[in-house]
Image (cartoon, rainbow, N blue to C red; front, side, top):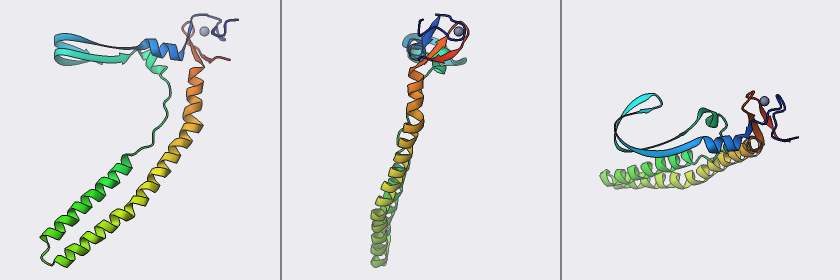
Length: 161
Ligand SMILES: [Zn+2]
């Protein structure tokens, strides 16, 4: 028996999710002047327009994705520290009583160094969370997706054995 035959209706008119997804993607470009319609909206165009997309079926059979460790918070914290430091430098320049500025700068510099392990800790925590998610959720989903087949006759989705 054909492994790709639909267990629900017996049809051979089936295709793996991977192959539906690959064949359903399209991309290209066109040179036009006038109005283009993107997702039903009119967009004025002049010259070369590149477009890419996929069929609804292909989109519905897209592979699950693994998460990536978010470095956003990490960058944000560094950015905040950088601003604090530059403010400290300014404080030192404009301060009439120089010692206050120096203390301020020293405190800010210290907080910069103290922030580093906190940032690293936050990043590691985030990374571990992401790894756990990928191991327990994303990878099994991707594995299931690789074995998934769609029947075009009865719209039944099934797993290859
Ligand atoms: Zn079927």
